[in-house]
Image 1 (cartoon, rainbow, N blue to C red):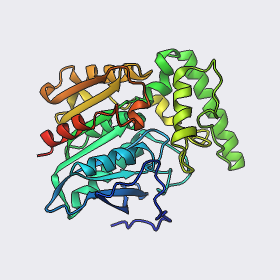
Image 2 (cartoon, one colour):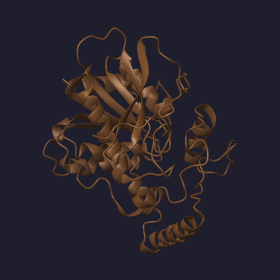
Image 3 (cartoon, rainbow, N blue to C red):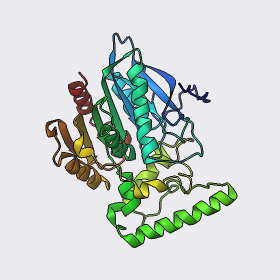
Image 4 (cartoon, helix red, strand yellow):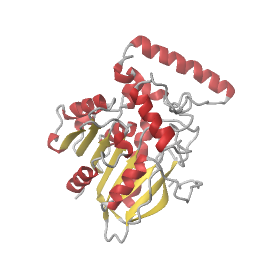
Length: 331
């Protein structure tokens, strides 16, 4: 059996949120089926007894575990769950080369590897495991729930379908063969140059502050989070972004094909005023179309909330609802 590689993990508290004294925190590692070692923060309720329900958390797409996935994980641990917030392959403190790469398959596997780890954790009840995906990892969480029956409940917050964005652009504005062909041309040309030079380059992260007044609101929204209040030195979005061809494979690999066959419980949460809300609504509609278990599927729309409100605004994130959902289905 493959053994996790040794990673150089920061031991200091370098999160973008305060540490809770009611929760024990430690760094852990586990390995996925591609042999990549993943790094995670594990949060355990202090003085917990017996085997606990557990939740693996990841996202957003291009973020690190020190940002909002860690906030969600620590908060759920305060509520009595053992949780992990992990860095995906090729990013943050996790292993994998080349750096700053994403893959529909490997990233779905990352979530499954997190479930592997929780399934054999001596403090976890393996029959009570859930996952929680934020933003682009919301779509990946649904994709994982569609393939892994060990997952008993899935929460998706302010979700993106990254394959839809890659193939059709924001709001489906570039949904044409011509637009996709141009994207393929750009990626294909870049691959040749990268192979020749050996330099993957970087595609660019969020815009620096202050964002120009004429920029779309969601661009400003992202920058204020990643470049401002939640800046982190290891976050792709806070710095130089993915490598130039790092997200290429999302262009022709839709990830939500069989979500209408998910039998386990799913809660999709979105902000009413989020630019991405259409993706959550559409994903919910597709998931319910002919689903064998529609009774355990929910869509929750938060009035007046924008996309990043569900990253770190604890007055908006419905943690009580999330706790109750997991308690209902992880029992």
